[in-house]
Image 1 (cartoon, rainbow, N blue to C red):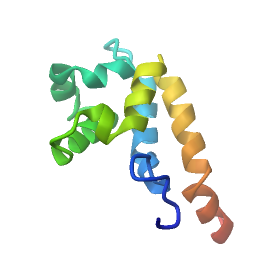
Image 2 (cartoon, rainbow, N blue to C red):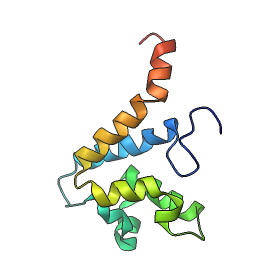
Image 3 (cartoon, one colour):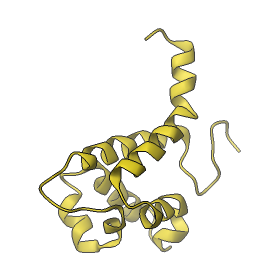
Length: 112
């Protein structure tokens, strides 16, 4: 298994960044009442994918990984969407994933 890999079904270190940014974007949205579980609603996914990065990333995964249900192809993202009730919790978790991998590796080598 390659270095930095979290298994075949997890998010590798650098993959969590767009989901973190997308969750932060959704934390600040006030015009609609979007929750993490809404990524499973096809019509909401289509409506929000061009405006919200998190939804766009989920839509991209679903277009790329055909032939398997989302809970099988992306179990970590599926679990996150079904168990966390707010975008703040999603963004906190994604930040911890990022900090556990690529961010620490990058900041350890570069001056910021």
